Image (cartoon, rainbow, N blue to C red):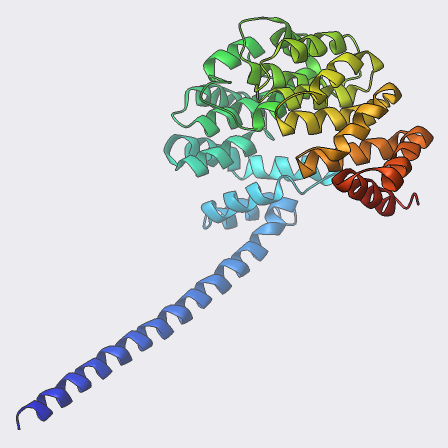
Length: 346
């Protein structure tokens, strides 16, 4: 007899709790949408300040009420503004104190915030910002250290490349692709420092590979025998081998032929694929039969790259593809047919 009233009270209590939760969710959503609208309106109001649409005194007055939003907006827009408006944008941001707040974020922000600040500070290049970026080379976070180094390099103020390798522990702790960006920035004005990283024996293979990749589009053919020697002397399982071979392909010099052929016999499919691709890029016609053999490779990616490379070798490559497509066996025949069909060479 007493169970039914108890169940009724429990049901009522649960209903009230559910009602409170639903009401809370509705209120939270309403507040969230209201805040989003306010932030959007604030951003629309602040954009003209950065673009110079307000008088100097009025800009400073308005910006003082939303410094964080203004700084975030500057970080977003700084890479998007181009042409004659860029200098005005940066000058307005400087006048509104954006570099000061970015430097402050590097002292107190989260790793992500410090990284964003380090990337943005490169655009200002004033002595205080450069000094703060140099200090960030000792940051506790490896990504922040590397971002600071890239920003310094973009501003033409990076320490010597050999010093950065040691300070950032490149090739040991840090393996980010940003290393290539860093080396490319340094190479714009000091290519000899990046070249030295390739030649000096004390640097790990990953550092050499990044340095080679940074210089691979330089057209410096004197690098070809150096890279080719690294290919031949490297351990067959060295992860840097594909990067060496891709660099040889990018340089496009026929002196790479021996190293590329050596790469085709490697036990690692990534290396064989990179070698096949390089053979096509460098137009190594003498390696066409080896590429035809790779059409039957156990790795589909190697087969694909070999087919692509043959297609790039003009008539000689097409002849081999047609021959394999007509008289080849199994996988090789199918790869050749697919390559011919995709390239419309049938």
